[in-house]
Image (cartoon, rainbow, N blue to C red; front, side, top):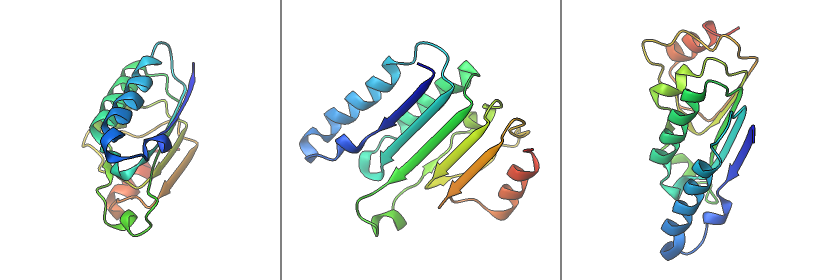
Length: 145
């Protein structure tokens, strides 16, 4: 399956079953990681506490070197919660996805590693409510076509 889209909206259930559903969600993602993945999209509720698992997914994607499109969106049913929650910080291995052509990030933290030399094939970039300092944004854009 070259295109994978995961949405954790079904995790919004009682707190007693949330951890079980989170486990099932993450297990389902890793279960389909068999062949080359060209597109990966994940939409997660901010209170899912799944960020460590996403780091492992990104690590797996970085090894395949086939990924062309990456979408990561965080959301919440409570608009006020969006301003106070812990955002997902992209792991440094994310910036080794040199074949990316399309990147969409929502509610993430972007800190480039010193070794970042750009996404040389990036054709579209969409950043929504990300935490990024001006110097980092300039470096990100400078190193992309």
